[in-house]
Length: 252
Image (tube, rainbow, N blue to C red; front, side, top):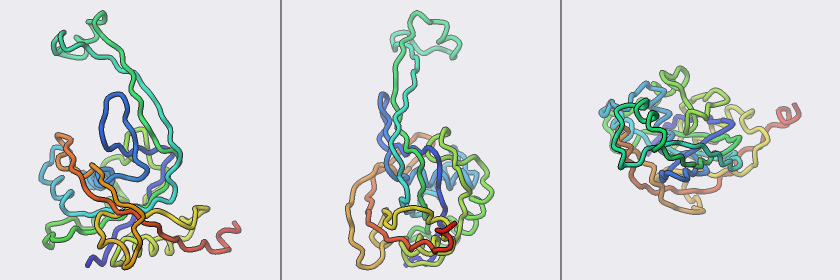
């Protein structure tokens, strides 16, 4: 059974967690996708998309979990783009495409975001990974403190608004890890509701006897960053009661 988790805080004015891609409409999930969390880890470690071996090691080496403290409100934005009809043939460059202005067609796409969000994200070693072959949690925590590449919450237009505050905590499950993390820094509780939603990848990451409020399938398990291939996985969601904020903190 897992006994260590790395927990970070994810807070941003805007976030977007796409799953099923589309041309005219690109939606967002209410909570971070597995691909988004692994993407943050890969960026912090400095893994490039063309590093197939490094990306595969990342995908196979970690399980993820999330705690939704504030999922925010939905915002829909739109932008326009221009394209050439397929009958015009593939242009040699963008300049060549723009030179054919009379053949360009303009389209609108809509993209969804979540506004004013706060989540906790958890990472733990995947089952069956040999020692030294997976991702070291202490090294990943240090990478989150000093990331190699810029970090954002889903899209480049979604920068983080506070430090990640990575902490490795001992716990047999995700719920215990998140509670230990919050109890060590009560200011994070803020004015959040006393009940938050916990989402995990396996039933073993839930505390014994936890009631599952729902189970669903998400197509967000990355298989290849270079070709943008994703597989489906199960996600289990349950409610988690958060500790009360100390009176002296609430009075400030």
